[in-house]
Length: 437
Ligand code: HSE
Picture (cartoon, helix red, strand yellow):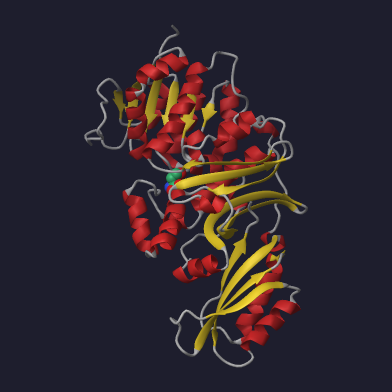
């Protein structure tokens, strides 16, 4: 049998402890699958005394993850610290430079420094695996990088943040407040250390940036993603969406358009009958549309210790099975040096349907003024309804518009016009509608 594969793990939080547990519980099965033992020989975390419910007695403890990366007797360095700079970046770079394979779940790090790290890995001929960085346990990286060779991607989109989907699902199903749902998501170990990364869409953007590079062979450009989170989605939006045959999801979307590659993260109305609308709770889903395959939809657990550990262990097993000279190809599907800059499509030119919710003074001429602003901007309306749920003050009403396909620029201008007309009693709500089967 080949020599044991020696693993060093930096970061022993929810995911790190789950990885140690899975590697121990499934040791015999992994040995059968990989043709060699897989053993954790070194670990590093902030607090050596904390009880993590796993046996670390056989592993050498390092206070400094960079030292572990450089000096420990390991073949694979697993980074589960998180964060796009600081110790996470330093130890991954150190591990690659020292010629170690790296497995990471760190989407923020890859979204910011992925191309440079891929170059370092490719230069040293080592693997940089990151399945757990996107959509938790769903094997989307493997699918895009290996199983879809030769396909040209037109659009990739999905529910990429378990915390947001969990919150939106429970708000709709149980009428709970945003804050209560977020607290539960934190308790269950789904949320980031700073949950604003989840709810403001940054975490989805990090994952989308990685998927965009894989899909289109472009450099990672997380900074140019249009970003809106879910913190201003209210029960009124969720109810209105339901009445109109839609469900609200936080989607990340990257698509080829005539004006370039569009990358956007925002709350989105998807038809209630579509498959993606049925993806509930912490479950994630990624849809990939290509020229050869057509549309593929992958769904599965998107966050939490076990789901993420499953992807990390899969990456480790891939390395255990690899032999010198055999790899699964470049880190982002093409050699890092050949990843191209891309032409960014402006959000203003985004084309699609829109849901617009306005709270207006209940007086003569308001409907007509709103309709005029829409017509002046060439916006064709699919429906316009006055929504009276009995909760508004008597002197105000909710008006909900659903548009046919139009542009972001037209909608922004029309809503600006309606606001200027002085009929609104609160900030208008605009939610994009996404085509989905
Ligand atoms: N906070 C992330 C989520 C964890 O909720 O999806 C998985 O990346």
